[in-house]
Length: 135
Image: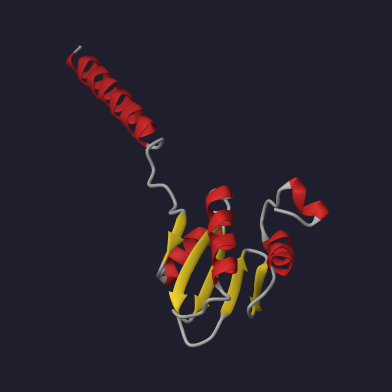
C-alpha cells in the first residue's frame, strides 16, 4: 500500500513539473532584430540559422552621398524586422555585405534597385513584391 502511495506521489510530481517545463518552452529568448553596430560570430550564426538576412553597411562617417542608402537600409530593417538585420559601422570605404542562409554578396555604394535585387535574391522568405523588383 505504501509503495502505491509513493509511486502515485512521484508520478503526480513528475506530471506537475513537466507542465512547468512545457510552459517555460514558450518563453525562449528571442533572436535579436533591428539595427546593430557590432555582432559576434555566434549572434551572426544564430540570426542566419533563424532565417534572417544580415546587411552589413560600412561607411566613412563623413560620407554625405551614403545618407540616402543608409536611410533606405534603416527603413528596410524596420519594415522587415522579422527578416532583415542591419549592422552599421564606420570604416574607410563604403561596403555593403548581405549575408543569409543562401550565401553572401558584397556591394560598393549601390543604388536602391541593386540593394533590393540582392536582398530579394538572398532573403529566405522574400515578400511577393520582389517579383516586381520592389521591397
